[in-house]
Image (cartoon, rainbow, N blue to C red):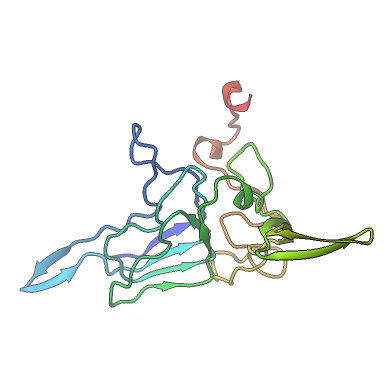
Length: 209
């Protein structure tokens, strides 16, 4: 019936099972049909709101959404990086509305990790700049010598920083020119997950060293 909210989560690892670490789906959207008074009615027509999540999958998620039928889902300001398909195929009415997400393919380590500041916790605050490949043969001159570098690695402004859209009631306390895309807002306290949310919680030595 809905509504369902998926808000400010970090998805960092996906696996089929303990024995199969090959990676699965980030968001499962299973649904089925009931027959009510002779009419075939979907169980998945309620609104799904997917806001400000960071789905990075450094260990290999496949698709962002599962292959099930999906209706009436709304996504905004998410970071979706995966090896496979980002959004599901159009499933008809009510239509889905996917906008203002930062999407990309799976790159082990490297460029995706350069988007974020390093942390020992599940903190994914955005770095001011990140690495990006500038495709093509780029010509340079240094000390009077001309040379060219194919596909050089360059520093560019972080495309997720201050690039989110305003969602009243969800990201009102943003800092900067606009909300950040992803789970963490630069300048606000870090999110805490699981037992670390409890007052006075501390990590045991084997999780620190």
